[in-house]
Amino acid sequence: MPRAAAPSLRMTGPGPEGTRSFAQAIGGFASIPFMACLYATVIFPLIIVSCDPTDSVCLLEPRPESKIFWPILAAVALVLALRNFSRLNFPPHILWLFGYLALAGASVLWAFNPQASFVRFLQQTMIVVSIVIPALLASRKADLMRGLFLCFAIATVLNAFFVLGRPPIDTKFATWGYPGYFSGKNYLGECEAIAVLLAFHEALHPGRRRVFGILIAIAAFVLLILSNSKTALGLMFLTPMLAVATLLLRKMTRISLALILLAIPIGWLIFTTLTGFSVYRISNILYGDPTFTGRATIWEFVESEISHRPLLGWGYQSFWLAGPDAPSIVNAPGWVKDMPNGHNGYLDIKVELGYVGYVLFLGFILTSLHAIGRIAERAPVRAWIILTLALQVIITNGLESIWMRGFEMLWIVFLILAAEIARYRLPVAARAVRRRPKPRLGAPKPALADPSHRARSDAIARAQWRAAQGATFAATHSPLETAESPATVNNRLILDRFTQHPGRHNPAR
Image 1 (cartoon, rainbow, N blue to C red):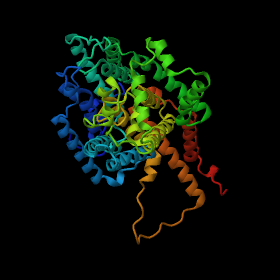
Image 2 (image 1 turned 90 degrees about the horizontal axis):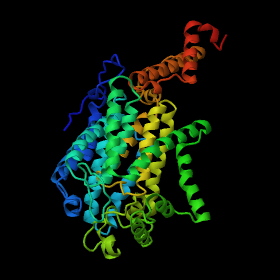
Image 3 (image 1 turned 30 degrees about the horizontal axis):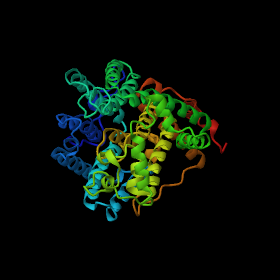
């Protein structure tokens, strides 16, 4: 278990290559989300690596390691929250997430299997708290994205050895592909697609970071090909381009990223309604199978069960794997009875928590996307990698069920992204203003300053804050993220005019 360090990390500044060590980037509070990622991506899959991919009992059996790891991590996070409560500031998208989590806890009252629902809700609460709280408390100099890259770089190196020594999956009801140390080839594909994207972002930095990023990108891409995961491979090319196009459109129009991306499914819905061209036609074109490898049958069943409890659903995690008399077994046709989930994260949200839960979770996703747009104003490259990874998870949930599913690898990634969005949504100056201490009761009021002097001082202070913010990004981010914008140049000129000729700009003269 990592020891919690002081809230601020002492930095020696950038080295000759303008980089920092991994220990500096993920030290302190940031080490706790890193440990959560490492457990979900590397440690737990290695624990169940001996299970046969077709043995669902072995794969889904609760493990004592998880019953120890997550409570300890959550306890550490709660202690940190109590000791630093005044520093916590929850942005809107985190509040939407907490609202959905609260509804999941309340659903125990109407869940089909209250006991299973309550246990799974407690586990999910520990996971969310373990990641979000320490990340919000981490120093601004900590780099969660670099920690995420290190986590997936370790997974890539280990998977290379397993691919060399473990035969591919080649059974009657599964597509050929190497699984690495995971229980299925799609897991390896999802892992390596994320690794390629993170490695590309790492390669944008100079020096050894660029060399390391290129090496991991090559290895991860080879493993992605060997996994034979067509969906992950296609999304790896699609999401970076979609993120660039969305950010450029947002820059030109000043429209929220959430509205731009929300227009895509709305436009698709209108198009399919008018033309009758459905996603199953696309599946037939891409895969030669109009059912998305049988998912159409599962989705039809899930939609019929949603209609039975449309408002609040069957209860959190109380539909699938909820006992021998669960509706997923009693009402499901044929082989659908053996499914652990609906293979669609959005349908599973509706079947578990109804349309109320669906609205809450969509609020979490849309407010997260909106906040990425604010990051793009100051750090466009960081906004691009966050948006790319977020789109990778959001689109994958259309074919797999990942949202709020225990410690699924991509769900942990999205939680870390949500925490990183919360940390970078405000500039350093705004955060400093919010934390300005209040005057003590009974303390004498300061004398009123001359209005012209106060205006000049405020302008100088704002320019200094922005200059300090730019210096912080220059020391911790890639050259592409630190290029001076016209606003930055303007602020520097204002500072020069006020400091060199203060009287010339006095409004009172």
